[in-house]
Image 1: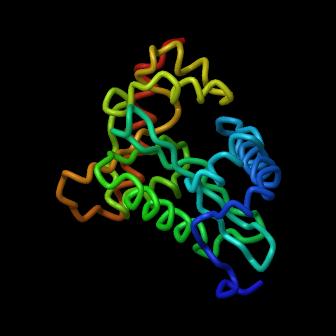
Image 2: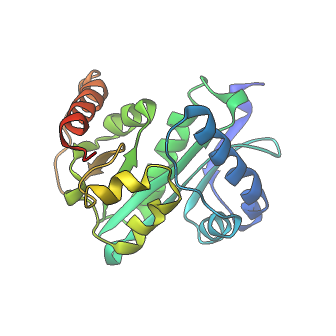
Length: 206
């Protein structure tokens, strides 16, 4: 494969045909990592693509990466979710290209919204930090019930419930367009993960 042959673009309606493959990649990734990730249906992914809220990475006609955005809290918040890369195309910097394109899409469609992400992935935390996201408590994220209901497909949902939605195994990160950008340390994502784990050790209810 050639990295230069991969195109990362805003999804078009015709890309809805890849919905099933995207769902399979998301599910397989969760199994491999052994971490929680909310399951998504073919219909849900198709709706994001058709609605102009997704980014795809293509190597010719083969889908090799994906991510999407969703608006919450009457447009005050936008989540970037479902970042996935075909295992055969990992370690090529493709996740960064998809993340940057998804960030661009969110800023274009919702320029005044706060962008947020909840993740257990250190690489995603690194990408978020590079784009200007900062770690925050869940209370600073959207209180939209529909968003949190989407976590029900995650194997760690019971932890979120037991802690009254204050914390889980995921780390919350937020980009506020009203706040000036600060240069992030390369070590920032590691400190985020360490602090998050320590917090959970002391505060997660048994």
